[in-house]
Amino acid sequence: MDGKPDIGVIGMPALNEVFLGVPGQGATLNGEPIRTSTQTRLDQSILFVNEGDKIHRDYPVLFGRLMQSGQTRRFTYDCYPHALLAAGYVDAVIDYDLQPYDYLPVQAVVAAAGGIMTDWDGKALDLNSDGRVISAATSELHAEMLDLVRG
Image (cartoon, rainbow, N blue to C red; front, side, top):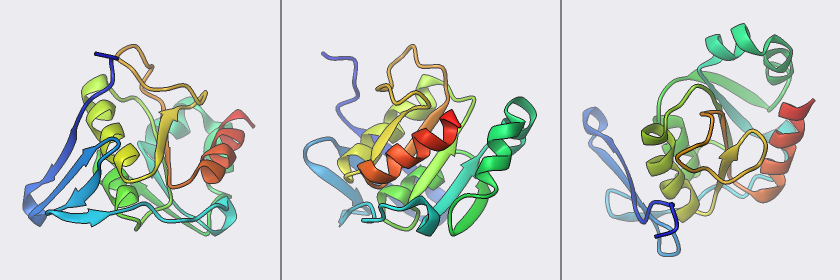
């Protein structure tokens, strides 16, 4: 046991969608294989900002940078944007104020689909992470997101 989930599931009953990820074995949506996008540039990305109101309240300077980033930005909540990233529809997600039960299952799906999900410092997520997370489709895009957060 290494402290990482062996499987992740994101269930969206209202949409009849189940995302399943097993790191090292791939990810699926309703049994069909999914993969993150190949987007490497933040200025061309679809960026979803989860908990934008809280980020605006607690990190107003970062919020301002987020509003100038990506080709397309959307405000969202909860796990679905990370699922959309795993399926290749979204390129990057920034999230805030999460608990381990929020991010660990999602991280398994994102990783299994080929993406990267860490905290805002680029550290691997675990039970003691502070609930600030970034998901990105590629390592290049993840690095740009980390640079954006760091200012």
